[in-house]
Length: 447
Image 1 (spheres, one colour):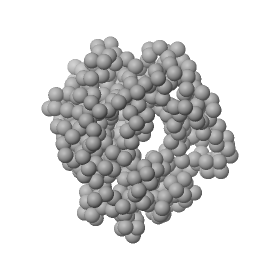
Image 2: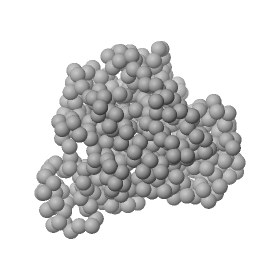
Image 3: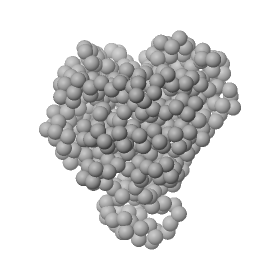
Image 4: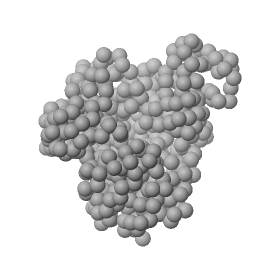
């Protein structure tokens, strides 16, 4: 039986994105919102909307009892968590099951296994994937940690095992900063994720960040929807994503994509998900980093190259439907790229909330915009600064870059500052155009 009514437990552009697919599938929608979001587009477009609390996320979008109560009073038979917030929260997924409302995402066992970055590395290694061996900080004395790091050699990367979205991470290149950074990250991880477990791994100095989009059903079928290059980052937060990765050989592309499928099968995965890797350009080797058990911000890049609606497939998988295509049936077209448009100063990166006096989105051949803003909308200071995503597709990377340049210049957002000038500077940089960059690009070449 298909879902009749889906509650969207999120906000912003992803809530609008999910809502639109539900409408195409003939599914009624319920949006939830904080008091700060009462004029947001997802509230206006949904069939029903329920206010679940004040502006602070902890009292609204992270308030599990309020969300489940909203599902009950509206008669929703499923909840889509989007990304962020509760999308990878195993407690929330478990409670959905107890309340007899379907969680649109993977099974709880997969969320739990892959949510722990240390344990997920062990699983990936068991599945045959290459990994960077971790130093398990919480199981060691300070002296043992220092000895292990000396053996591993600087630079190293400290990570929170329960972290995500680029948070809970720091690169360290000397012994003096090691233990203070561990103490600080433990405190931050406990406050941010409820878990202070840390690990340390070797820091690759010239890496690409490559991820593979996978799709699975509840009948053991798994396919990949190609890879995405997410190398352009600021403080481990993705800024621009593209597909295919411009520096992978066809053989390496096949290898990395197949390894993601193998891992998904190994952990009995049954939804959309993303397997993330570090690709060492100097050694032509890739290493498993983590698996995100949710839809990603950058999923439209894969949709643009294949024509596959990943949200629709995620919903159908949750309904128990079998995949209607195999790997060989998936077409890949041209080159796609996404720029995340944020309400922030393009030089200082300071948030820029406030009233949007005028908004004009770009259009034309090969241009897609996922957004939730409009002229007269007031951007809240309480949430993530992302306003929109501009996704373009061309026959090759050169046409894609020309189209993205045109789309960015055509975009008008008046009243607040945005990072559009930063995007234009990045995609016009000769090293970006020439594929001569790593995850350090913004820190080293865009000062």
